[in-house]
Amino acid sequence: MIRLALFQPEIPHNAGTLVRLAACLGFHIDIIGPCGFLLSEKHFQRAGMDYVRLADLHYHNSYEEFEHSLTEPCRLIAMTAKSGVPYTQFRYKAGDVLIAGCESVGLPTYMLDKCNHAVTIPMKSSARSINLALSAGIISSEALRQLNLQAAS
Image 1 (cartoon, one colour):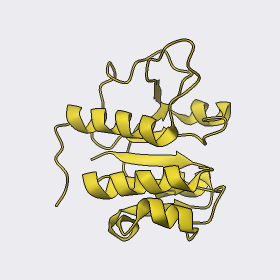
Image 2 (cartoon, helix red, strand yellow):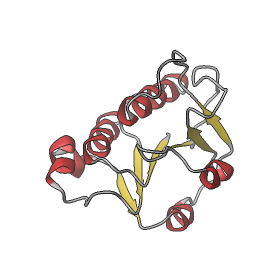
Image 3 (spheres, rainbow, N blue to C red):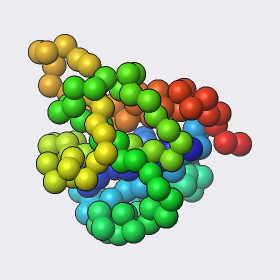
Image 4 (tube, rainbow, N blue to C red):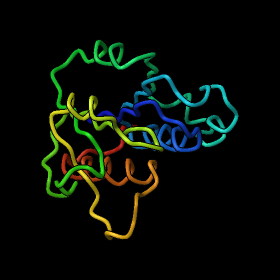
């Protein structure tokens, strides 16, 4: 299985959407704080709907707390526009953790340094970025496809 981690997300709609995706596709999701919103915030709850209860969702107050929760060996895969490796050319492995940065600045350099690999979604040079929830959905879907994983029932 894969795991999706959101590092200090700022927009509750994006996080809620990804919690819903994780619940539907059966992968773990971690939110690494501090967040720009409360998990009880109505926008987060509305985007996640009743899927928040169904998701394998874990909140961590800090990166160190998140890192401590990684009990199995894993690779941290940064999802970033700062990579030259297209997400479709990377070979994902079971246990990989896909990590996304906050909406305004992405993953800071010190977090990129903690990652084993980094992937990107190739875009037109005139485009700045794709929405966080869309990007994480695209890349996590490719990882699941490569691993031939079916949604857990």
